[in-house]
Length: 279
Image (tube, rainbow, N blue to C red; front, side, top):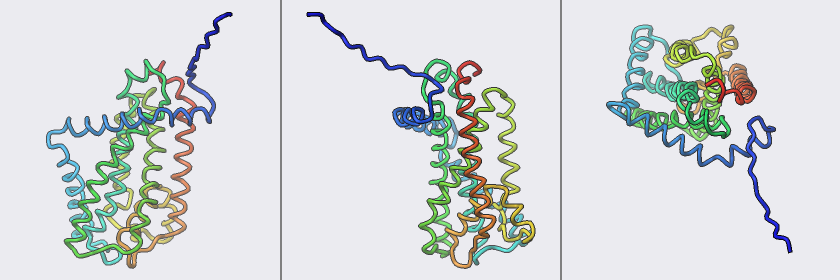
């Protein structure tokens, strides 16, 4: 009787079909959570004041915008909300987007050793980096809750829709982040470009002012910035009352966000197999 031995072999091939690739993402979910947890620990352990910086940064930014746009320029507030509350409601999605974009764009470079030696779906790396931005978001959301209690300005039923706009902010960050992460592998200059883009984007987005101050004939054009719809959505959900969404611009921003996410993932997948050689 001949002994027959069956050898099970696992063949891992980068560049598989889409169905296999997304299944691999599910199989490597433990790696995803490990990288996210590691990035969170590193982010706060390597800072002098730790979590306090996550509190001070949005507060100082809110103070500057309130003085410049609210006191000096005397721009109108929205839905009768205190100017500080209106600004902070916009700081939530912008800070989430900016932090997630910064972490994601450098994520592949920061994991060079692992990428060059071991195969796994590379999308896990920028995906886990987005989670770091959620930590600062939760801290800032707690600050906003305290501000609203201080001013006795409470949200209405619209607050339950906030997770929808949160997902849109994450989609915008992920879409732009995977583009920049892939480009950063080949062109290291992007590590210097990203901070400028984030800083510039904050001033052209309605963070320190209401998008309602933009003339009606320019509102649709202004909404070509995907974060306009996201920020307006956050304010609509948080401020409630008389806050209104400019629906044509909002749907345009949503469409562009989804297009950016799809194009970013498509480009990332097309160049993913070259990362180990180039990085």
